[in-house]
Amino acid sequence: LSAAATSSNAFAGGVVAHGPGILSYLLQGEPDSYPGPQKALQLAKKARDVLVADVGIAVTGVEDPNTSSQMFPFGTAWLAISKEGFEHVEEVRLPGDMERIRQNSGISMLNLLRRYLQDHS
Image 1 (spheres, rainbow, N blue to C red):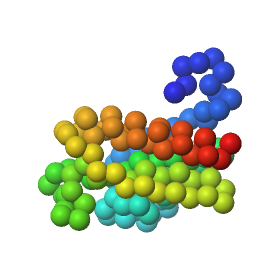
Image 2 (cartoon, helix red, strand yellow):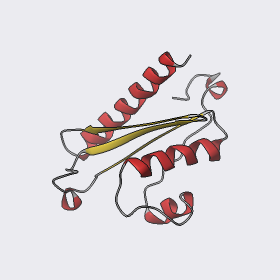
Image 3 (cartoon, rainbow, N blue to C red):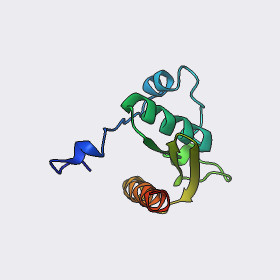
Image 4 (cartoon, rainbow, N blue to C red):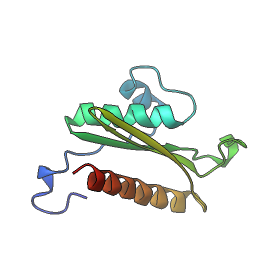
């Protein structure tokens, strides 16, 4: 995302928050115990705030087959976009093993961001 010499004009940075400690810190001590649309939106807002960016994006999901449920099976992910005056979350169900789910959730998030930028530019 940031390999081009001028990428800093459009890409402020990124935050990878995986463990409960960093999630608690970013979400001010109130992370939901389970991923979901609200957590995705909170993380997108926090990314926007921390990076002083116009748009924040986030992905969270069910990453452990042992903690999945009928309602949210393994491979369920939530993709969020946050901008001043605009919030959007999409739920996706991705097949495959963890590596494939990671790859496809990233691709899905970038596609959602692309569609947002096309519609709002």
